Length: 230
Image 1 (cartoon, rainbow, N blue to C red):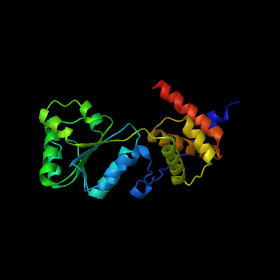
Image 2: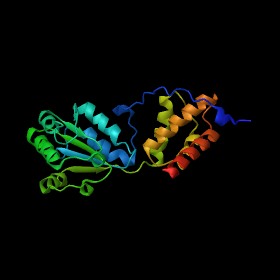
Image 3: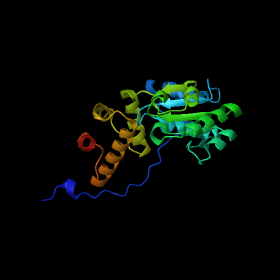
């Protein structure tokens, strides 16, 4: 006899609109400094602010809030991409600097244009700028003058709030004890929370059940096994 798990049919993954505005941002100690700097715009201590933190720490959410508030243009400082020109005309946002990479000369000119024209540059990265492979001394000097704000690993309080919010985005309301069970066993990142809630929602819908501790145990095991294989 085939197992229920093997026979289940997952429904189509209809998109759920996650709330990503400033009022929907959940703030705890790991995020407080980064939230404060975003809220302080345009009264920044320097024209260039760098948000550094691990994957899933909330950098993208904060960058999205700032981009909308500042009317910023997303850029990639490489030759021919128009980043330097964009920095002449208004605030600019460069996300995932360490992962996407950049051209030293292009980023140097972006920073100079931002400073010269009274605009702002927000950069997100997993690694502190001192770890970037920068060869141009003038660029390294500019980066040292930037304001670097570190985002810490999400704590239990923040992860709990995020889990509850993600379920609420799907019109699901879960018991506090179940949230505590999940948080104690999940990977410590906001990306992991998103993946976990999405999988639990789809699996519960496929089986016509509530989100239970047994279901959470199953999904946590699946995600842990997948992580081990990676």
